[in-house]
Amino acid sequence: MRVLSVDLGTANTVAVLSDHGVVDVDGGPTMPSSVYLDEDGTLRVGREAERRSRQDPSRYEPNPKRHIDKVTIKLGEQNLPVNDALAAIYARVLEAVTVLLKGEHPDEIRLTHPAEWGPSRRNKLLSSARLAGMTGELVPVPEAIAVASLGSGRPLAVYDFGADTFDVSVLDSQHRILADGSLSDVGGLDIDQALLEHIGRTVSHKDPAGWQRLMRPVTVDDHRARLGLREELRLAKEDLSELPQVEVLMPEPFEKVVITRAELEALIRPSLIRSTEVLISTVRRAGVTPEHVYLVGGSCRMPLVAQIIAEKVGIVPTNPDHPETIVASGAQVVDRAMITLKAEDDKPKSVEPPTVVTAPVSPAVSGPHPVNPNVSGPNPVISGSYPSGSYPSGSYPSGSYPSGAYSASGTYQVNPNVSGSYPTNFPQQQAPKKDNKKVLIGAGAAVLVVAGVIGAVFALSGPSLPSADDCKDDTAQDGQGFTKCLRQLAGTVPDGGGCEKADSAQITGMEEIKGTVVSCTIRDGYAVQYILTDSVTGAENNASSISKSFQTDRVEADWTGNGLEGDYRAATSSGTGVLVFTAKGRPMFGILTKTAEENADELKADEMADFFEKSVQPGE
Image (cartoon, rainbow, N blue to C red; front, side):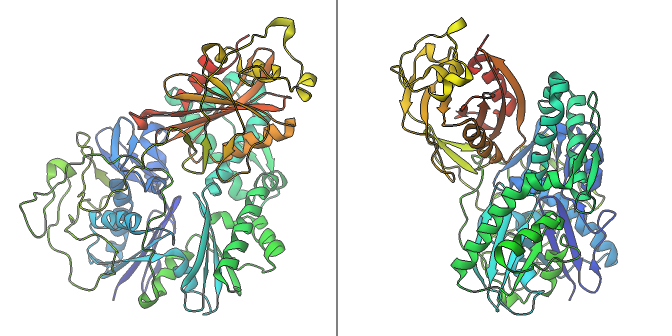
């Protein structure tokens, strides 16, 4: 029987075919899980998508799997269904495999996925595979079970350091998952972001305006420069696994920067320690002692990963020669009788409200449904029913799916006039009811509880502005709870009222932030909290912890005003925005938040930054 296993990862996709091994899909064993949407609706994938990204970065999505809980991805001015993006990747794999099989299709396709995924996310993968034209029997395989199948039949742990998240699973000798855990703010993309911030601290002072254009691109050239820099950082991170230092080529007007392995390890050590703590706690919950810790994911190539696990856990981890391909290889040898699937979905990291999508089928027609070419685009369609056979319970929803909705040419057409081109007879994630007292920081990683607000003000100006030394013993508060230093940071915000003292600033997943806290509502759904802590380091650490929870691209810039200077970082996700700003040399910081009740997808980090600069940043 011809079995194909496909590991569609956040950064790369790998396929393994029985009696062949790893498939060369896109010029190598790994294909970038990237998509690019041309203006004419042609959807390109893999390295071709990467090459096209320089033409118009707004039409490029390097990691569509990160949007698994969404309905669409905005590429340029079009909303591309997430299913279409994933289907294009699967179709590219199927094209390469069909050539190897001399025109035949695999009998069975094993699709790997994170162990904690429930039926809704699995169904999206499976329906995307059907949309790509995969006609064989579809079998979902949890990644941890796939890896364990390569083991020795002993209890083991799988430490999966992927591009988007960190996941760990502990399995018994029968490859049953006993416990799992994860960190949503630790992944390869977060390392790239940490390197970007590190370089910014080194070079931004040479041309603050140039750096701000790089962090907040407006023109196509700006976007190209930012995209090019991110690619340089990714390559630098990979090279530092082998070299003591590397040079990073910077866009004009900045000169190249040298980064050492020691600098990189200093940046990522705290996150790796956290991941190891999750590993330890997961082992305790599982109630077994693993004999092996298998490392999975390209980020595990960094020597520090194995070093910290050995130090903290006492087990020298097993680091395969090709950690990127181990999941797809393991899926080939999985005993299907041992596969167990999670019955319920975890709360998604970010959820979009369901949209009305035109289904390309007639409800009056039973049996296999042809694809409407006016909806799916000008692709050849192979109609027909699916093969009979046993399908895993919960593997995909009942109903028929279009077959062959994508051609095998490597480019796929999407009708720009239609918001969706796939059947909607599978469960959609429902957006939770918004709670105005909670603000999600960066793709669901942390939740900020914003206090209610009322108040009055007192004015500060000119020579009465407090110095940095004054802030150390700044305790006297006015009727709204402002100390002189906090009032200096707040500028004119309290003049509109709506400010009051709060007991603390609370961040879910973090220790409660102590100090003097004042919360203010502004307008248009914006709110801001001002926090005076006990030390400059405490303020900086708290602000850094919040910004590290951002899972989307962020906007960064410096600011000055009212005798102060500092920096800010902003990000948005699914209609929720957060901007954290600090004051240099002062034990205080602020958090600006916004929840968009309407047009959630249109809230961008740039919008948060613009509002801060116009309405929150204290003036001179």
